[in-house]
Image (cartoon, rainbow, N blue to C red; front, side):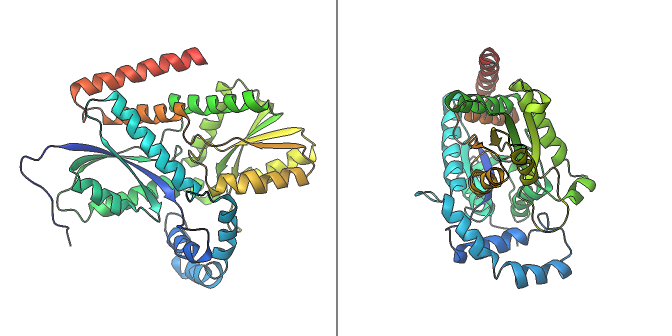
Length: 361
C-alpha cells in the first residue's frame, strides 16, 4: 500500500543529503547482537548462498553461538557514548552539516542512516520527507563500491521509494575511491600520524574482503580497492616494496579476495619486519573491523609471528580534510539542485581546496 503523501500545493522545495553507513548493534551484548546479525546475514547481497542451504546454517549454527562471541569483541571497543561506528558517523554528519552551512546560502538538510539497525534508512527518509525534502542525495559511506555494501544500501532506499505515492527526486553516488579530496585526506592522515609516531618499514593497506565469487560475477570492488591503494601509495611517494594491499574479515570456508591481511602480517612477522603500520581506507569511520580485528587481533598475529612493532593508523573519522572532501563530493552531485549563487560558491570552494591541497602536497 502506498503511503499517504504530505504534499501541499505551494510548499517550498527542500534538498536533503542522506549519509548511509553499514550499521551497528545497539549494545555490546548477545541480546542486541542476535537481531543485528540476523538482519545482516539474511541480506541476499551479503550472503549469496541459496536459502535452502544457508538458512539451516544461519539459524542452526551461527545465530545460537556467534552473538556471544561478537558481543565480547564489541565490548573491547565500545565507547562511553556507544558504538564507535555510530559515534563517528553522527559526528561526521554534524560536521558535514556545518561545512555545507558555511559554504551555501541555502544548505541542504543533512542526516544519516544505517543500512542495518538503527536509525534505519526507512525511518530517516520518512523524517526527511516530513521536513519537506523533495530532492535527496544518497551518499553511501563506502568509498569503494561493492554489491554487499553500496548496493545493499541502495536496495533499502528504493524499497522506501516503492512505498511512496509522492516520490522525491533521488540522486545516488556509486563510489569515490579515486576522488582527489578523499585520496588527499587519506594521505594527510597518514602523514600526520607519521609526524607524531615515526615511519614504518611497511605500510599495510587493508580493505574489507568479499568472496572471490563476487569478483568473478562482475563486482568491481577489487579493482576500486587496488586503485585506492595505488593512489594512496603515490601520494605518499612509496616504492612498491614499502606497502602492500590486502583484504581482511574473511568469513566461512570459501575463497575470498587475496592476499589475506592475516597471511600478509604473518609473513611480515616471520621476516622479522621491525615495524608495520596498518591503515583501512575502505572504512571512513573506526568500527569493530578496525579497532578490534586490526588494532588488536592483527597486532597479535604480527607480533606472534616474530614482528617487532605494530601501529594501527585510525580511520578518517572527523579529520577536517575528510569533512571538506565529503562536502566537495556532495556539492558536486548537488549541482542543478542548488541555487545559482550556491552552485558558484560550491565550485569556487572546491577549486580553492584543490589549490590548497596541491600546495600542501
